[in-house]
Image (cartoon, rainbow over all chains, first blue to last red; front, side):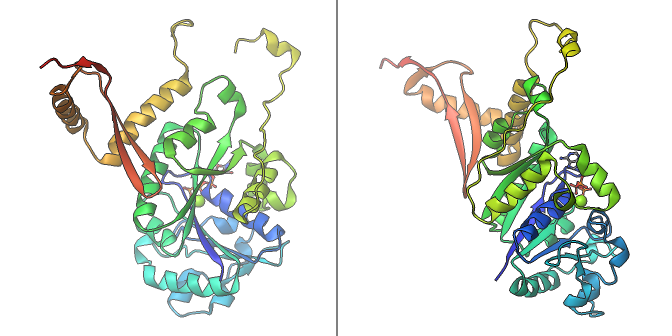
Length: 261
Length: 80
Ligand SMILES: Nc1ncnc2c1ncn2[C@@H]1O[C@H](COP(=O)(O)OP(=O)(O)OP(=O)(O)O)[C@@H](O)[C@H]1O
Ligand SMILES: [Mg+2]
């Protein structure tokens, strides 16, 4: 029986889809059978981020409405034969979603896969609820800013009320230079305020945007530091005790010594 | 902004967050939170001496429970 994990945040644009694709790929690199499910009905993105938009034939609503079997809707990733995308419907809205039917589909998928990662839409409405309903665990993605952390806290409260047990924190777009200048929240502040267990810190990394625009998953094709972060998150999900990376500050050139900080 | 007296942004951000979360987590409005503080002070004042507004309230979440913590510095014991 596989594990269903929702990736959610409250606030939009903090990196849920990025985390879903890359951590999903990192789990697949470990040999696990993985489905990443796009639960952002009406605004699907995961297919594009993974570069699979041309291979999508059916989507999750086609399964719900009986137009195809589950196996027909799953799209295999280009490099990894054990990583699959379950696409969202672009034609429906989040209000069209029948939570019971989605639960049913995900529980069938769980029987044949090690992991189902559910990419939640932003917000706390129906879309979020149908992404969270099939999950028994959650990864909360925050960026180091007040509004993102606040929204995350709200989402954690809702998840706890719905009996989700394992809730872990991912801090994304962490910029050690800003932290050193004390211009943004430190990771320990965020952990302290939210009272969650940290499972990963992902640095701000331009390679992420680049690979998303090319339609490649960075943790499959890339080498930058964030790839290590994604790989380590996958290992920690698997229960391995991996030490946290020290994210280095950018090196300052000689001329920077004369610049005002 | 002055170079000398300026508080670091991370400190300001953390303080703001803590205050926001006290309200979000308890769903207490600022005015209700104030009433709560006054009531707590009144009760404690019956037994020990406390300052006027010397109370801080924090609402923390621990696994499966939410904890309201009031910190009240005591000035001295009441003489009866
Ligand atoms: N660590 C990072 N470094 C640099 N850019 C990043 C990082 N993480 C995410 N991004 C960029 O931020 C943008 C938003 O990311 P993403 O789409 O994953 O967020 P989201 O939470 O899924 O958004 P939405 O709420 O709209 O679904 C993307 O352009 C992505 O490339
Ligand atoms: Mg998204």
